[in-house]
Length: 396
Image (cartoon, rainbow, N blue to C red):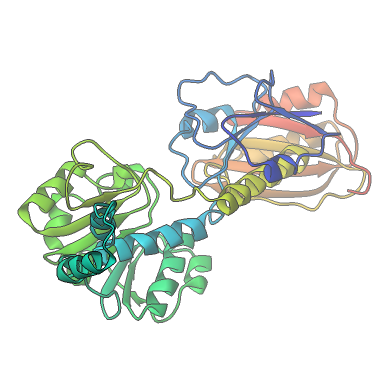
């Protein structure tokens, strides 16, 4: 029986992915094998020795201490793409709100409450509506920084709206490149994109390399009056620099999903309360994906969408015992592990080895059951971080 501790409210469709005959799931589970979370900050939470995995129902994992997890052999999963459509739709709303006088117009109309003379109200509206005139998105140039699941979807909508689309992503994957429309003009660097865009939208992860990616220097490169949209993470944008650019008139408007002191009161800022992924569909998609990834890893050792360990998958031969070995990516570790098995006449039926950066995973299927002494010997191999033994499963 695997134990999964939940934090935050997890969509029921996600919780239903756990077979109750094999999984105990709840918010007060002791000695859990896994955490299933949304926004819960884990940096100050002590991890039990039993913890094998953490699944974050969402794309960002800045609420998870990745380095500590890696050192302890805890695989951290996220759910890239599960909330992409929800964020895409809010980005489109942000572009429209920045281009037209929608919000001030609605606020002004609210002030007409109590007016009983329809003719007078109509006359007032006709007289004042010019105050809320804006511009159309058609024909304008949108620069997209980050061309993953969300960025590529935003590109498709922008093209359908008749916009010109520029894209920049130094880490563009092959899969993302296939998704991307050939109508998107790929830019060689961020500076060129900023200089040519009327609107710039950010869709990159919050990592050290992207902290304050948009700073004073970047903002000076943007067209006068350009619009900056941030539905990624607040740390990607230097809030003080944005305030200076808005005050100086260099930046026309800042639209974001991350309200910050010093910006929320600015008349050129449209700030939303971090609702990019707050749709029923998005929360369900994220919960289902996160749950499925935990189930796969706990039952088989297969890894999909981990942020710290490599993706790995191996079909299970019926009747075999599986070893899941997590290790530092150092030469000779796998050879040493296989020597331990050979010295004890444990026959290997199938195996796969994958590495990513400083970490690696080995899935090793062996013909017979493995005793505690063999497991202890593998754990004693230098640079082995964690060893799991999965008992044979009927039918694979």
